[in-house]
Image (cartoon, rainbow, N blue to C red):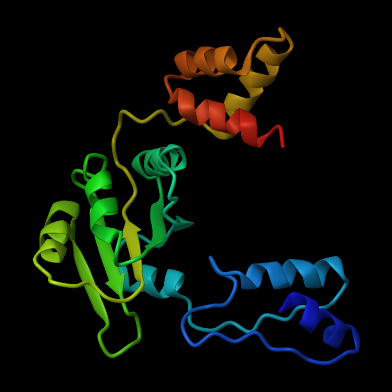
Length: 215
């Protein structure tokens, strides 16, 4: 619809992007329209409305002081593993979306990482069949596996890790040492290995930071 909408906007017509569930552009293709408008110097006004991310967080009973929203769980295994590690090492509340068809598989994958952490599964928020399950991940899984069918889009809220074994090293510190090693013209994999050993952090985390900061 972008090619249809842009000419109308350029003629100063007002176009509204409205959703009947949640906020448009949050893990939603409406984001592409916003980008197109900005690239064409078209003013975009946002009128706040219901958001599954914030609504679920508030209802979860899990800390709202610091949180990250990770969108939908990735499909490919490599990216999914990084996604799970991000949740495992998080020092802040994590929120993500998942479909009812994949929620049990996702929670089973995460079960290993989230032993004693609080989990809130929020389903059909603000609708007739609204449901919020607050428990540990094992009990949430047991609850879902007893059901014949799971319906509705799902938001998952997970408490921060309190493990004292996690290295409290910032991305900036890691990238600072990476910069020093890059002068030696070492391979990225070698740099990631050396930095991970120095700071006792995940090699995958270091590698991902290097790649992201080269874009």
